[in-house]
Image 1: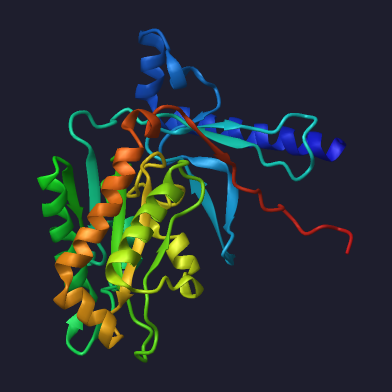
Image 2 (image 1 turned 90 degrees about the vertical axis):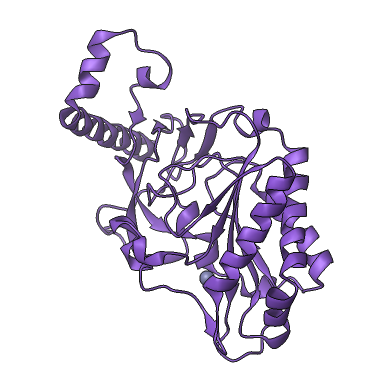
Length: 321
Ligand SMILES: [Zn+2]
């Protein structure tokens, strides 16, 4: 019990320090507090504003050697620490407010052409600049990604959907009814075949639906096998979906998935993506349309998200073995 209490007190202290530091840095925000009535999330004393540390050092669950400090996404988050009766391993929750820039008018979908314009990545994504994608027998992944993305865009436009074809750099806190990143893989030897999908953690509740709708349509139309065995942690931790590390990421409310459409290194997969690009694009569009028809905007953006907080790293090794 005392351990839980001291953990809760420590967490509260960290949040207090973070808030004090933020207040010191943002004099204008302080002015806003004085000038007008404080409403909504701004009134919450546990609000951590965009880009500010969340008071916890997270470890990437898929890469324990890479501890990192989680940061609040655009719009901020509200830290809800575990109560004094919580178990010692409780981490509390992060409440992510509904974004302020929810689109109005037609449904909006983003198709990201993987690796496109990677050389224009901002400083926080500079490690992506040399990641220009797979290539095989003179065919580059990025040309496939962009070609399919544009075809999907044309099809969705024809159905009244507003489409953003996005490059490597995601607009800060991007908000839409759906986001699909397109990639094509290489195994380096030409043996693997199939397509793969993933979404990330600590996001909205509709990403399984988006993933499954595209997976069903894509598998049925292309005849490709679903290659679940080779879904990687770098897919589940895809930078564009990781709002806790990057401001240039898709807002947590935006249903978002990554699709590896096939292996550019496989002759059959590559021929499918090059020679039957319209069929590939139509199947992706069909999956997205099913998702949009089943999932109204009012549901996607209907409420704040509550996601688990990041586990704190111990500040020093335990004294007992
Ligand atoms: Zn790729």
